[in-house]
Length: 151
Image 1 (cartoon, one colour):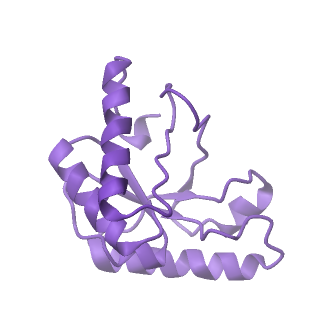
Image 2: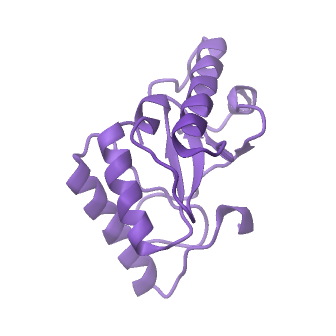
Image 3: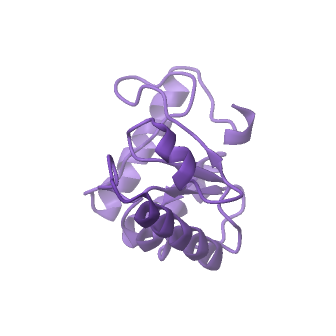
């Protein structure tokens, strides 16, 4: 999540679904988050940090997101989702006390593993619908959502 309105809309939709989902947000988006039973939270690396030659800036942005997520949800984020690259810099940018996660294939039909639903650039209602559609596809394929810690 990169937008606070999307974060609030998606979080409320997830609470109604009662599924073990992890919400990844940057510092700006976390302004829209609230404490939510059954949801886990993670830091999403700031968009545009891909290939960044300033790792200290990425690390600083990630730390800011940790503080904002904890302030708004009452819980520290458990995970760190780097930008799409998969290199060693992601390990250096991961905030302390978070686990680095990498998604599998994010296009096409859902498959076992970490599935991302990117709501960037969508309005709150469209973001909520995109997430609901992804959850429906998971059920239609007879898959189930499990806590990220169980993957």
